[in-house]
Image 1 (cartoon, rainbow, N blue to C red):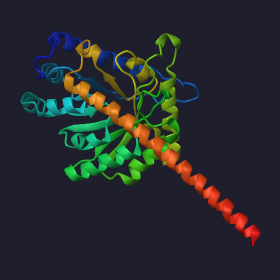
Image 2: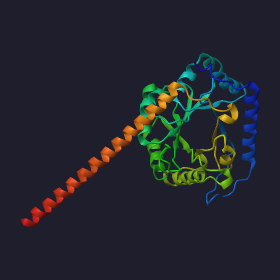
Image 3: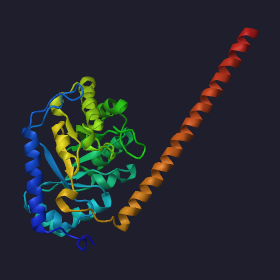
Image 4: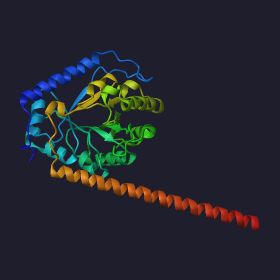
Length: 309
């Protein structure tokens, strides 16, 4: 089912990979300066994650044979299909998968079972961290799963991620309570509306500040925290600001194909569950508010009784 999807030519993938890697090295060599009062700490090494969302197995194999090892996927269903593909298993034995899409809590079990899963870049809540940790314990993996905390730096409702004020709390929970997870750093997508012509991306700067705050609160070193920011249209800018992990897809493999029906269904289900969760949160808030009001009335009644006595 995956094989029939449009493939990029071998030569175009090879050329694109060379160009992207050359651009990465060029940015690493540049001297970084303080941005908005925060020092980016330019990385000596930047990991390129080749995003193969909706792309066929042959494109993955071509990139792998060019030396690429880190690959990113957005859909758990598609990632499961690709990891089970016999050609991937036979040829790409050292492949390192990054999950870069939204993780529904009820899909944590599926994600935990993925072979060669190197990193989950989208841990966005304590609930997900705990669930993923539990499923990894059951799966009996020999190594901890590397994770990045996803931060909603743009504060957009349609974006997943923990708020900037709650980042350190989530990082602390992962480091102290989740024995199967290895905290590696922070990730943000940022606003899609930002234009490089307008200057420095404010969402990237916010992630730098989040990193510094995490270092202070969790007693970590700046150089020990990875930053995943930057995609096809802005990865060079992101590296200049200190990104150590960039996610590049269309620049390497060409325009993205329309999602398959199974992927559409996954997105629809995700939206339905998010809506249900939102309603449950609202109901919980109403219950809490009602309980608080009842307690106030009880306290007032007790005080009146005391005065009457």
